Image (tube, rainbow, N blue to C red; front, side, top):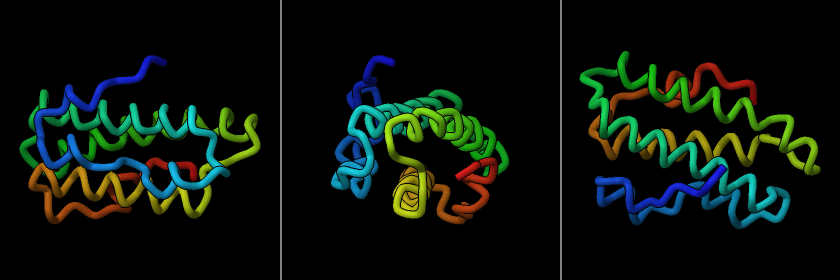
Length: 119
């Protein structure tokens, strides 16, 4: 999976945001997997900008698709001596919440944003 540039994001607040900072600073999480996770979040931002969801229901469709991509990395984390556990869950959830707010969805529920998660 090739890295996706944050330059593709139009939202200036998100262009300068440090995605998954908690995971990036913890050696328990392999950096190449954190990069894959960051790509998912960047793709989510791009999807939001292109599809311009009009309400939370439409936003949740996009965030759920991104959450399923995180789910698909679960085995790869395990194969590399890591897992999406409490610290990762908090970091990922916090970023989903930050993204929602950056696109003016201030009343999004973080648990609903990542509802289909396996982690």
